Image 1 (cartoon, rainbow, N blue to C red):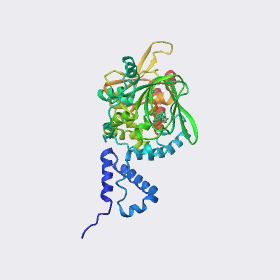
Image 2: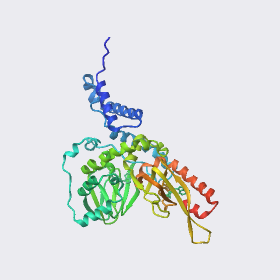
Image 3: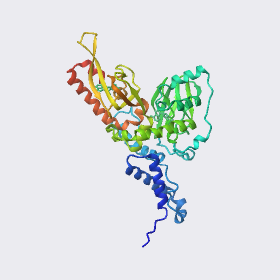
Image 4: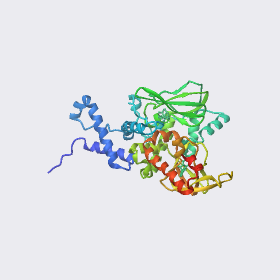
Length: 411
Ligand code: CMP
Ligand code: CMP
């Protein structure tokens, strides 16, 4: 008896296998589900043009979906609904993740998210000559940019060589929502408002104040710009062109995914996120190492980052006056965080200074996420965080009785 292999099966399975090998998903079943759902959707939407072609040819495996790109879009569509609910019941400080909620134009769509292919490497490296003074300013502006933290020295140097300066004045539109992405921007100076348009209404969601970076999403995920950025003062920006960004940063992110995907999957905090949202978390985190006793967070400081312990232990302490009237303060241990636990969320959620300090116990590695990514990506995890924050007060009461000074700082 001969078994006939259905036409197209080989191509279908080959394309799927290629995507699996390329993305190395932790959850193969979910990956498969999204992959084939997307493929089917594409077949349905293209049916009027494809019917006749399909009678004679294999299913559209050869035209297989580039999974990451497509899955990002599916998920953000779902995420939008979820977050609307969140917004209703929680606070509106946390905007729904807005990336990829718009239909991509063909020109953008055509470029696949494929960091392992070396097409882009064939172009010569971009270099913008700089004076020593410019390079010094550029290095200072880029010092704290998380997306650059995982680059090796050679990659970092290529990025710095490629960056060029752009000055702006109050009212300049640096980015307009829905445009194609041209550059990634690092702020050297100036203030900027962020607006997001959803359901026809534009809303200011946040702002940048003389530090930070923006414009990475359209370049990372080949989507239209997800927000409008307008200067509210004169300012200076350093720009990195799309090609260099993809060639260096996006490729680096692919390595990062392989490194951190498994760990991210184990984090209880992120269970309310979809698989591809967790991948986006991997894309924005960077790893920082601390030596024994090094301070990671100082109580009272302004907050700009959120931390997840990757290895080692982190000691959380709080200052308190020895007596109600005395000026002298002592620092008291209030908690310990170990692998998989997070800290530094409270100040970001409440918009207040850091409520406690954090110190490395032994050698410590943390995954760090900046405040803007925290707001954009972790909205769905707010319930878990809020429940934990409610526990802080109980924890402090049991440690200090009803000492109000400390409660007030953390509430
Ligand atoms: P991109 O979509 O390329 O262009 C607009 C940028 O605004 C976006 O990348 C982010 O870097 C930045 N941004 C800041 N806050 C938000 C937000 N809430 N939603 C979307 N983009 C944001
Ligand atoms: P944040 O205030 O941003 O910085 C200090 C962090 O310590 C805080 O966020 C929490 O993540 C963490 N922390 C742990 N226990 C407590 C507590 N009882 N009160 C306040 N912060 C705590």
